[in-house]
Image (tube, rainbow, N blue to C red; front, side):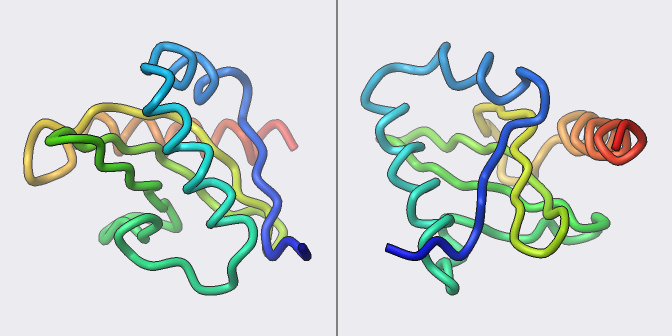
Length: 112
């Protein structure tokens, strides 16, 4: 299978979040990350640009009645960088999570 995108983690932000999740939820995250890496077109229910941001995307995992999100962004074309995650409890994404994601994205590019 030819991969369309490469996915990496920035520091340990994503991994710290991921390892705290139940195994079945981790498996769903793994499945969606494979979907994102292997397919040119990824349905918006799994991977979506966050309106009002400069290139932030959210990986969207619904599990039971809960919604989980992980922020990401692109570098050098098809390189997807995973950063912070959270459990979504409101309709609108809380601003504090977006601000943290923007800070981590800036940090990533500043360190390059």
